[in-house]
Length: 289
Image 1 (tube, rainbow, N blue to C red):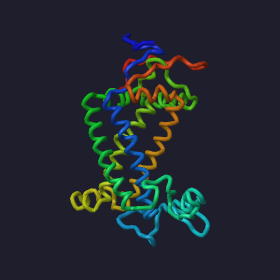
Image 2 (image 1 turned 30 degrees about the vertical axis):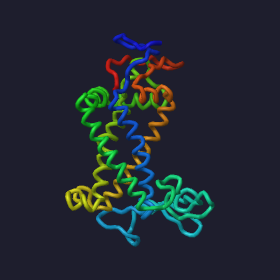
Image 3 (image 1 turned 180 degrees about the vertical axis):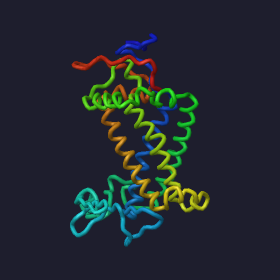
Image 4 (image 1 turned 120 degrees about the vertical axis):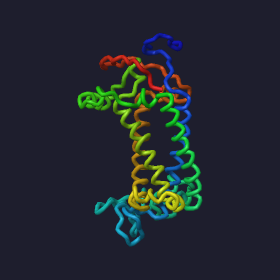
């Protein structure tokens, strides 16, 4: 089918879905986040323990630690501990040598332990990540993408509506036709959480861990309760971001990866048709950008 010019697009029509600023930010973000996560694991390997408060060292009680003892690797959170030999804390590298670093070399940048190199990669892409987020936020507020497509409507916040969307997702019943152009309440909540909560927290806690920024903005330490608390929050936000990415990728695969990826490259999206044993989707009046 050719691109639709109707006021109400139909299943099978090729329609505009994502504007250029959204697509650019998405792909820059994808590259930056992967590098930030992998270089961040290198930095974490230098001291694989997390604390609350202003101070933390080897003999201080840690709320999370990854380590090895004897032939065993382990992950410990509080008093709970699980064996992770071969994955975390104790594993073999590509040459068969035993390593007791927290995260294996295949998951880090660089692929060998170098705190200085890991920091260079991390700090460089942190600025790309932060400036890209600021540019996207300004653009999306200016063109009303946030207000129009991400802000939930009052009717969408009702428990009945939320529970309905949860059941539809659990049954893998995705919207069809024009309804596929709108974000549902679960998507809106996750995107708002990432854009307005996780990303700002990661940026601010990252700045809090910098002695230079602490000298310029000492209030950051007060907000987050100390440098070690900021490091813990930074790590938690990073893991939540990993969880979001994994769920996002699974949903892309289930919804049709070729169509979804094409829409984020070209901006054009083929409206899906109805599936067998699936109830008719309610029409949408607004398109997501």
